[in-house]
Image 1 (cartoon, rainbow, N blue to C red):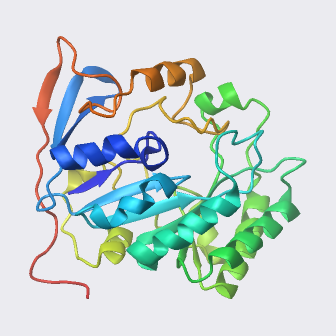
Image 2 (image 1 turned 180 degrees about the vertical axis):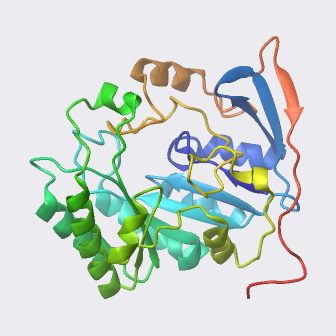
Image 3 (image 1 turned 90 degrees about the horizontal axis):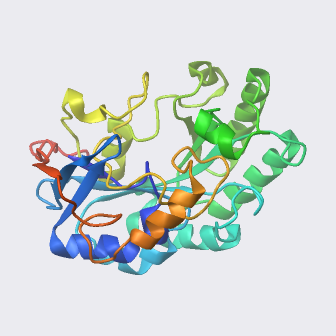
Length: 309
């Protein structure tokens, strides 16, 4: 099975010590975000967990411990060109790029993907700005990854609450920008892929199969998987990514990005941060009266008879 850590919060950036303690203890407790008294216990057993998938804006806090994590790893690191008025607590991009390159040296370029998302257009961040920024970042990351995931901003109600002035990127602009990114990517040895975007982007050279798909995870870990149909139960309609079994919690990321779908109550983020305990089996808080705990059904999906490499 696959364990995810990054659809609800940024564990490497803010909860690395907690995560390392969970690995040491060998299990983690996860609350159902839609029914908090329903708790799932995951055993963190390398014989059953085929890969840990990380999605972060700052891998640096976990970087010194990568070699001590006894699991196959899949990493997505988001690096965007926005300033502090959009991403107030994200480290300087140059620092993230340096961490990205160091991470690539540890896990390998196949296990590491650059995410340039979400993309939005404004007076400051216009078409030409994105072209220049993308080229500059791709040049700096050359050789450390072969894949870039792009996506255009989705106007969820949660996003409108914290970023009311943002608007959807017109389709014509999406196609022009994507085509330009494909051209830049070829220059630096990177394919451009999208997740849950217009499948028509394939016409300009974008791979539209998704970001955490079975095939991409197989390439990252070097193993072929036999994935049960229920594995992508948390994916959006039309999405084939394996997004289930996430260890995170909503409203717990301190980056404060205005476009974030997972943080929709800044006051609650602050309260949750105060409730976090590095030694708890829960990311936020501890066990509570009335908790109904269920052990996750865990088994390896790796096809042992056949390896990709």
